[in-house]
Amino acid sequence: MPYVLPGILATGPQHGYELKRQHDARFPEARPLAYGQVYATLQRLARDGHIEVLDTQADVAPERTRYCVTLSGGKKLRLWLAESIPPAPFVTNEIFAKLVVALLEGDRTAAAGMLSRQCDVHKSRVEELVTRRQAVQSSPAAALSLAFALDHLAADLRWLVTVAEVLDDLGEEISNADQHHP
Image 1 (cartoon, rainbow, N blue to C red):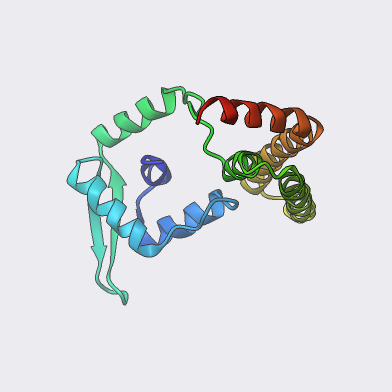
Image 2 (cartoon, rainbow, N blue to C red):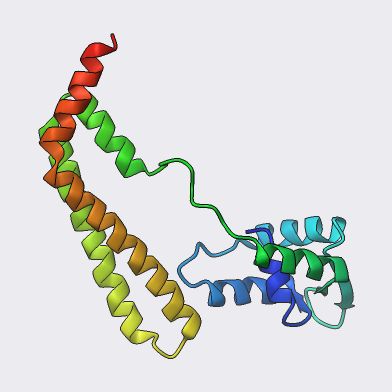
């Protein structure tokens, strides 16, 4: 997400510490940014002309440099916002990979156990997020982030249940395909 920090800066000049706090508050279910990642990104954005140093506050310790978005950075940000994001072209989920490997080994019991355990883990995470959602109803950003996470977990659970229902047929298909390709 190369334009998240410039997007936050578009709300007004900020220094790195403020940007990290804003990011973590506005994207509560995302991985928190590391300070090193923030400052490395700021350096790259400044080098590329997307942001610039507005001023440096030397009267505070540590010294704080405030950044703002440049005209070209604002233009790039608006172009990025206007772009549609294509769906991922490949299945890259580790759960899917584990399932296929278990079936390649011919161990449907291991595959069924893995699916069952994964359903339990997903259901537990759903319960955790539903509880958290009830506690953060006052924050639109947190509510939106939790809704996104819950919808993705629900889709994963539907897939896990579907696979569990056709596991025997799927195992047969993979075994037969494997026999035809030595």
